[in-house]
Amino acid sequence: MALNKNVDPTLLKGEGDGRVNVLLLGKGGPGHDGPDLTDTLLVASVDPLAKETALLSIPRDLWVKSDNGQSKINAVYANAKYRVLNNYSLKQQTDAVKQQAEDAGVKAIETTITNAMGIPIHYYVMVDFTAFKQAIDAVGGIDINVKTALYDPTVAWENHNNSLIAAVGQQHFDGVRALLYARSRHGSTRGDFDRTERQREVIVALKSRVLSLGTFANPLKLNQLIDAFGNHVTTDFTLNEMMRVYDIVKQVDSSKIQSIGLADPPNNFVTTGTVNNQSVVQPRAGLFDYSAIQSYIRNTLRDPFLKSENANIIILNGTSTPGLATLKSAELKSYGYNVTQVADAPTKTYTATVLVDMTKGVKKYTKNYLEKRLNVTAVKTLPDTAIVPGTADFVIILGTNEPSAQ
Image (tube, rainbow, N blue to C red):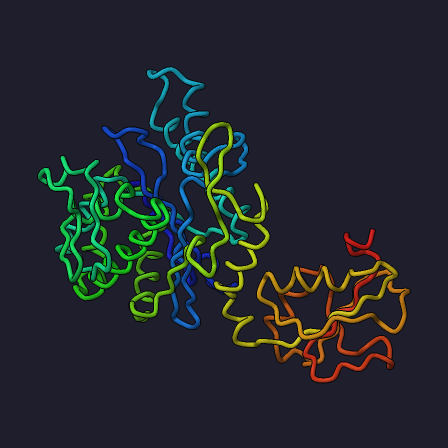
């Protein structure tokens, strides 16, 4: 397993800005059909401030665009990886070339998920079936309260010729059964959507088991486990970063880990469809229209600093472009900002957007975020005495330099 053990960070990437988003990828690995298809795609979003965690499942059949064209999202990593490898003969595929291909695949899937889901990815962990089973067995198995019996005759041969994968009630799974529980989709009413829900259950159960043992708080034992996984696990975490994650996650109550699916009513933002004679998953809003999904995810995974300050924001249209303030309001709300009022400014002659900080620097995180997003420096005084801010913490007056105004 490739791991940089020389870095000792004060903070995780993303921690200083709010949430830390970790992409969890699962693939079959050597000896399986489509060994590099990432049929498991989860984002673990950690809020170090509030000590909260959420698990977001991304449907493996989601139809997306990437630098390698259009495909199901589970093929993005593989397509980018093979695009590099195909430039070399088998003899030329040195360890350096293979690492280059691996890096290209990871970058492609991270970029695609960021573009589709609207959130940054700070780290990734890739495991294959072998590593998954090893991880479960290493902690002595996991316990899950199964709510719906799971039958799947297509994998019965892997389960002692028994099509019953999991009965209703409290179940203890070893690595083999946990993998079948997480992989199976043919015996489920909603197919892959139910499978992603079970995958989130497995992650929560594994987290609980790891923390209950306590042994992985020891860097030496964690390092030994990592080495035992070999090439079945890849990640860009350093050992010290892993320990930092452990320190944060151990304070998170497993019963409060939020489970997010894009097809779980009432938040069912995706549906099935057909593209190029393939059965795919696509946004209900239309192919490649992720706006509603992004707004839902950003507000569900709201930045902890924005959430803690919860600043009241007024947006005023200082131009003659109709609806400009409404458009900006929708944009900011999609990122979790608390926009309380939209109106026209007393005058329509603003050539540049103005950000007024009515808190005089008290709500510093919101001020900093808005300055970056609007590309302005906040001022402390309203430019027009006719503007009545009321209880607003920030007043934004839009100018003609706004892209939507041009």
